[in-house]
Image (cartoon, rainbow, N blue to C red; front, side, top):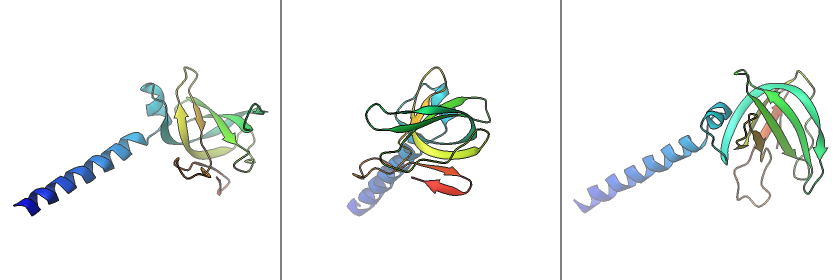
Length: 132
């Protein structure tokens, strides 16, 4: 009887962990509509504007993409921890990173590997090549 209870408890914990992981990851559209921040998202959109690098602290390459839904995202890609991504206007990009809510559509950062391996790795894909 104890073995059966232990097995049921392990299954319950496993299902909880899996569902928590799935809820934490999602789309930028969901995160925006639910005013969520600090969640990992995957998004695909077209570059609509290239911005100057942010050189305050860690250097970040910045650009804005428009998702198929019409929502825009500011992408802040750390170029001290990863290589610069060769983006241009009207180019399709796919990315995975940490979303931070704003009324303008939000920002995605952590689009790179964590050298300390404490944060989920992100990436940006352009033209079939992945940059992380």
